[in-house]
Length: 297
Image 1 (cartoon, one colour):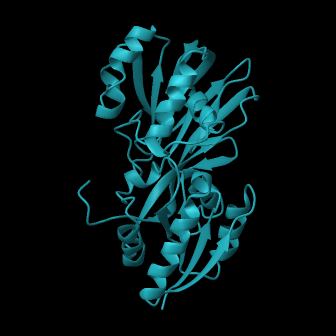
Image 2 (spheres, helix red, strand yellow):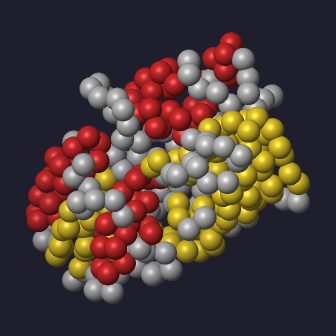
């Protein structure tokens, strides 16, 4: 019988993940699954738990959002131990690329079915990311969500944060080097995707693939508010590459230089934006994950 190590963040989704944790345990008990649960109490703890658990468990299961998954991934790269995910966060973007639904019973069944896939991960300086890293506006919106309370989570939360951020955000000056060329200009946002979405469903890198050994990079130049509102639906339609203010590239590595502070998120978590240089690279075939093999890509 397989042994499952459950790593859960009870603070995810402003504490609402506690109910998901409880219901997950009930479902596993009904199925006679052997598991151990460990709740995280602070930053980076999930990675340490996962690293130790890889030696003694057959499957590691993260219960939480993209931030929880990101922390768990830090301890699982190149371990070959499968990572299963029970979505329980605000955005739940990474699971979209694995075709794992938010419906709890289905997510549990997918984890227990155990269909694995080896995927790439990204790396920014010394931190791995499974899904996405963002510079500029999308990161500023993400930071805004941390100061918001009340209302629904998910996409609704990000939309409310987006509206709040619009009036005060200013483009940032970045130097981006990739594929033998250098871009030095103000940018509205720079999104680097291993997965396809961020922010609860914004398709900023809609053509990204988890196992093609490349990162998809979308750069959007500063644009007037009227143009932003006109083109905004394209981030849901997956046609951001048709926006005249946007450029789309694919690369195995890039270097980003900033002369001043810049908003940055990594898998939805705030990342230090006071450094001068950020080296981003693709790490091929670094993580084994459990996916929904039955769903149509």
